[in-house]
Length: 487
Ligand SMILES: Cc1ncc(COP(=O)(O)O)c(C=O)c1O
Image 1 (spheres, rainbow, N blue to C red):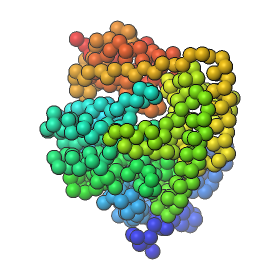
Image 2: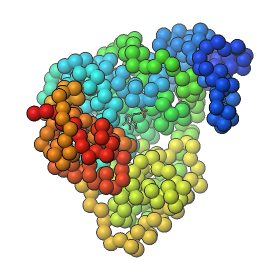
Image 3: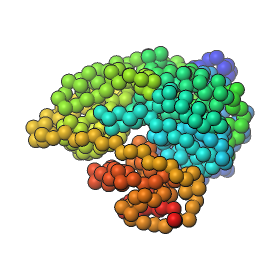
Image 4: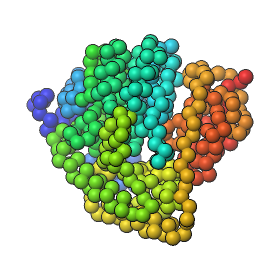
């Protein structure tokens, strides 16, 4: 029987499983009918049990858009586990949850403070909502060529300069695992009645170990979009939207999330959220303890390799680098004379190792409670060999260059929908861009609609393209041409 304080239950997963085990005759979609009508090789590969729970919102299985049964119970258990007043499941990743979170608090013309290093889903929400963004500059790390969090002082200044902002959005932690002083910012924003939204795509696990950066809910923030699938053990694309009631109403947030969500919600994804929540709540702390020990060992061994640097506690120097998640290993390879992307390719082709992402200077490896000491040994051996070989051959370090931040001359939505013309990338310098241009991952815009293109933006894009990194966004996949607003 369902009991809110018993985190060992999985009301959604258990009911789904019991339903499948009764083998009802199904006159409903999906038409593969538990795999029977599916391509045989794919069916065999996936397995009949997984396919037996690929179901839809028939009566006994509740409805994500109007939950009153097992989904409602699973979401309430999740809220309890995440320390939220309400939790809503997202089958459209954290991207979907971020769009709902923003659109629940700002509409056309409303002002919102956001860091410049936003994920593109934040930009999507800004374009869709018609809100007016004001950018906060994150702290840029010139040793690594990456952006961290924003300083408390930057938020205070932003709130003073733009007294009508309705909300402030923070990324916590960043892709590279660096956290801002969220609690201090939440207090300051709340004194002014400003809603605090958190992109917690990389922070699902932080709530379950006291040595990790404080979670958004623990820090008193109002809304947090959280990728359970990234480090919480659920299936890819499954996330949650956590809500603290007060400045926002959970029912309103849910109705906006519903507005943006498919009506064909995947029960495999939903059940995986229910099960992942159980595992995090029941065993998260001890599993994270093990993962953190492995990651710390890896960090120490990486830092003993000549030419390699993997940051740790020494990075914690300001409110923009207030805490860090040790499970992220940001391995700077610039000093061995290779780009991060080149190391990513060598790791793939020579060592059968896949990393989370690379950029011009670093590769990022993510450790979770799925890793073993032997995985780490393989990574260390590979990095040792690559570094040794390169240091013998090259005598140059790669200089770390960070592009300047462009000026926003037009609201992103206005630029996105403006009359545009297509010009060569080089000819876009000095023009207002209508496209978003990002390197994915991490998916942070180099340029976003409404910004004036600078020479070093173009150089940075070209350097990323030359390095083979995945630059995306414009209609032209080669980025030889882009859309700019007509003069
Ligand atoms: C900072 C940040 N926010 C949001 C997202 C989107 O998360 P999801 O992939 O779950 O949609 C990502 C994805 O990588 C991210 O890095």
